[in-house]
Image 1 (tube, helix red, strand yellow):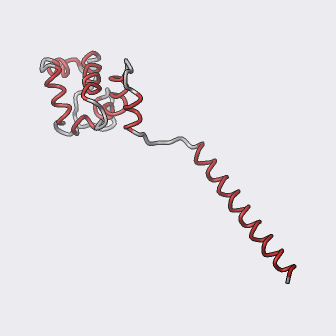
Image 2 (cartoon, rainbow, N blue to C red):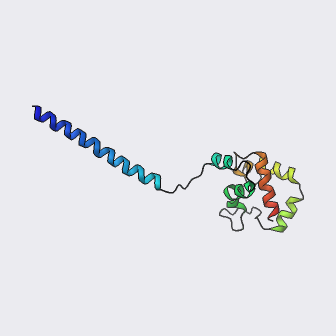
Image 3 (cartoon, rainbow, N blue to C red):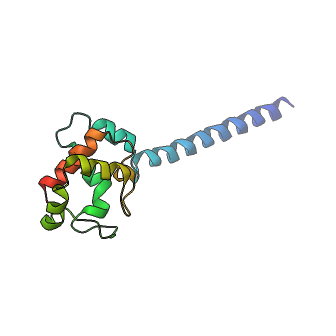
Length: 132
């Protein structure tokens, strides 16, 4: 009877040790994998006071529709299209900011950067205007 208890304890210990080892193996694989998602709140927070915030916000939130070769082609004005942006820049920063905040056409409110402050959106608009 005592011999049987020792075997039961040994098997339970071995089972726990094996489960723990397998868990560590799979957890270590997850930590080393590249994440393919972003955390907008973290990104925007990191950009506070960054002199290149406008460019970085553009690349993270706006480029999919507004880059020279957009991933999502909804006929949005593209960066580098001087003619398209000259007309828009004549509207003035306040109007462009209002359009960005409310959204227009396929562009969502705040350009999809719901975490961006108005000042960060202004910096992003300025980046686009300067790179028309």
